[in-house]
Length: 354
Image (tube, rainbow, N blue to C red; front, side, top):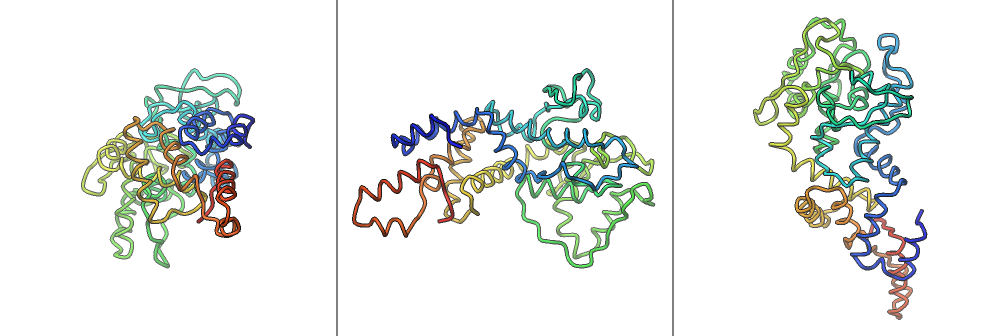
């Protein structure tokens, strides 16, 4: 809810001034209540809402996946996003950061030493890349949610990358798609070979060629996001991939290199659109494209700092105004009354579908 300072500047009519909006937005991003942004926007953007209810993991086969570990996995992306927002870090950290946040439970799962305390003790690990962690890509919450329980899923993991991070729109699969075996320990062939066979089906090839490679680089992580050198059948893991366009890479670092060279703009565009849609409370329309382009340009000028995106949104005409035919018609004869209507709505920073 608005605090005393925000209510005071709204009462004075100062929220109509873009510089005041920017200043108040920056102040609010430092507030502890911004965790709501990480939970609601982050959870929906990255699709980890209700991860704490995940029950697809076979706990007999993976006893390490207890409630404490599941809660820690759920908390990691929230802590990371809060750090980006409150410290006004580069949004590119979501992709390329070498650090993450862990408690002792998650540190044990990741093989990160010297993290002590209880489960509520969270620390920043700056050299997490030494343990193949850092940024969003290798977080166990996403690796675990996008695995069916008894094996990994390059399909689901790759689809998550291209859809949630890069904003691609992939059509739904055709009816009666043949399923891959459920248990990796019982596979006669490596999973990548089964996927290659699956892509030989004409109706499946066009879509799978867009995301399978993004998932194969995660094969060094098991069904609950644990690092591994062998799959559940005892075969050596192969995390290499040939990405769309012919570039090759292996593992998380190979994926990061590819994204930086070929898909970074897609990530920026997708994040800009997702945050704008969240702020406006509606789907974007064609006329919003100009604002998205200006947000991207401002973001680049500002060193990709998170508050640049927020400032671009809250000072936009889309955010500061809404069409209200009923009220504007009612006050048609009085400019002062119309101004009060608009001022009151801008003061509440409220926006709905025009």
